[in-house]
Image 1 (cartoon, rainbow, N blue to C red):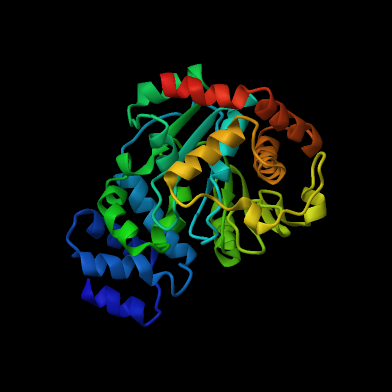
Image 2 (cartoon, helix red, strand yellow):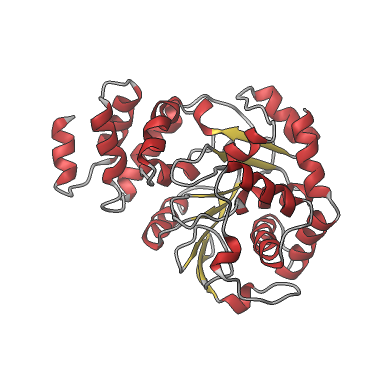
Length: 332
């Protein structure tokens, strides 16, 4: 391990097999905490290569608890996190709006490590009980239209590393890997990335899969569509630049100011923001951003225009269907 660390500190890269072996060694807890911290943070100095990400992902998926949810034509809406922007929980809200519009959602997430509140913090705070039981998750998808996969109970290594990541309080290689590790293997994914170079690496990786995807990067550094800047979008059809004007779907055409997207100072405040938005009591900026992300997700699953999908997302939110999805999920 010392040799590998020295190799990495010289800014050399690992082969796919070496990267896979590194994760396996970490999972066996053969590496002490200091070295684990060094490994977790070393990729802040450079972007991992396609080979390294491929090896890390392969090891993590081989080690994870297996479930089979492939009978559902579902979507995951997720971001890498680690953008340091402290936004409210946009992607998680978009998931409930999409589910309220009648689309199956397999959401994968975790507790916060580099942000104040992760999707797992929100759902746990609302009373959701994490499970890795396949039948329970299928029941949630059948009866509600959404299920939630809490990453650490599927990926033992993430559970082992969670305290270390929280202690560090900065993004690590696991932020990069997180969106790739959904155990439910949804066929569709809206993936937000905070780094343009990394977005392109994901794009190269996804081109060799059967996944239906859109990889988005806001050019001002957000890992989701925020209407604060233009975005780059990568899909099976290629690369596209969307200007703010093109993203302005529906009424209330506005350019959002970053301060309008700020989350709370703690989990309790972020839960209040979450419920306010889901109850139709969000600000114009909050609603617009959440609906735009939901619109992109819906557009991955049908051939409707962005305008029509925006209206579907808006009806899901304004009618209370999205909030009702949450209520039903919490009761199961």
